[in-house]
Length: 397
Length: 209
Image 1 (cartoon, helix red, strand yellow):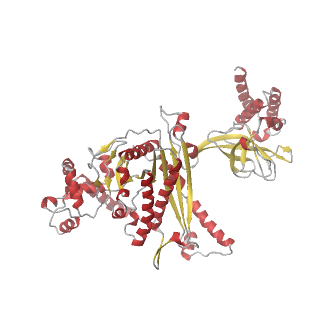
Image 2 (cartoon, rainbow over the protein chains, first blue to last red):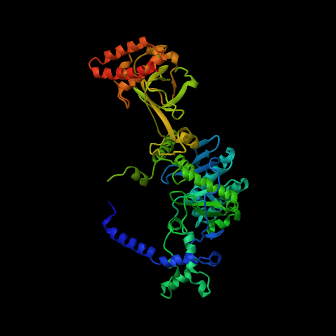
Image 3 (cartoon, rainbow over the protein chains, first blue to last red):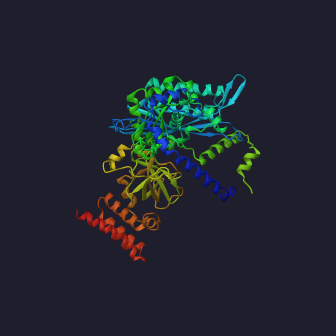
């Protein structure tokens, strides 16, 4: 055993006690803050605020709630895609990546149909594995490869919509915001966003609603707005400025007014907090994300989100702005996701099945390696593996 | 290998051995009757005959649990229609005991020399062939000694009832079969009684219909 649990338990106990005390402190002030919440004033604060956190910009009243729309749940199609990546070992003989896009097409109505399957793609050519920036070559790994997979998931979803009955919605597992590109170099961002923007544009032009569903989200964009609402800088005639505030707090010059907001997620706010909590099937208002990466997309394709009570949890649903602006499509997305959640105990059935199709098991990954080795051997080449790789395969004590 | 009839195909071999083979059905819940004959092509032989000894419907992925989907408002066939993906995530399987093979027109009541190949098509044996397969009851010994999820006595009783009907309520054949059962279990009267007692109960019900 490498970790002595007895040595960390007492520290963990103390950390939990502090977290609980923090969550319970300021409860009355927090309730008062929500009671006084003025959408117009807060929105103005948010627009001017300088914070290091992400802030949700409401497209309507912040705490509006919408029940399950009048939607005929027995007549619609749902297309879901999900991808898995098998990246070659850096110590292996061949560089490649396999993207396996699992899909599930469900059609409900007089003639119910289902299609399930997976489409694997091997990326092995130079243009697949490298991003060229003048004389520089940047490997397509990590965030860049994940962005490529996300685009392939969207492209597959779009293609599968071709021959299904309307109304149809395409669901993706996880976020539609390419967070992984934040902090990447310019050429990587440009390379990834070009494809991403193209496929999002095609969804818009074909008027096919698409949504990313995030189960158990950890985001705090709305809670962070409450911090801005609690800030006392505007009363002092200044815009909210977190860096300045924190520096002064550290110098002991002031008390941090937003400490009354508990250290919780939006999931907790919409799931547990009385007055704000959603009932099963209800969704929150739509919010615009202030992610910097999204500013590089056309405005109508920028991603907005809402929270939905799926029957078993609060999920975050991300959609392009053009869908949020169309009441009929927004209701269709809301109704379809809710119906799908009802069919699979709180998580969209189509996504669950697409995931099952996409999964690449450990045995299959080993088989891929064995096939590569065999193909080299057939060509008369016995590939040597690195000493590190050998040490991993033949573990000895 | 003989040319098997496409329209009679019911599934394909997904596990194989000399003594038994597992078949995944083409359609969910469309499984052959317990005790009925199935046929599959082979390597080195024209066809291998088996008797259905067990069937089950489970999740395709053994790691996934099958959970309740229905309610008072949505049941049975309607439930399947409302959940079209079930036909992809569930599968029906059956197990067949290899009991004979055919080579150059000769029917041999022996376990096949080679197991049927994986992924080969399995078909129902047409009614017209049942007579030829059952004229001799020599293969009963294989069923009698078979150890599977279904008790051998129940399997034999189901098989006898199936053959009796397919041979056109052939009472003479049934008498011969009963004598063969009695001969096989002459040292175990109780066992013989379990097979014939089960069969008798089924036939009594049929006679009173």
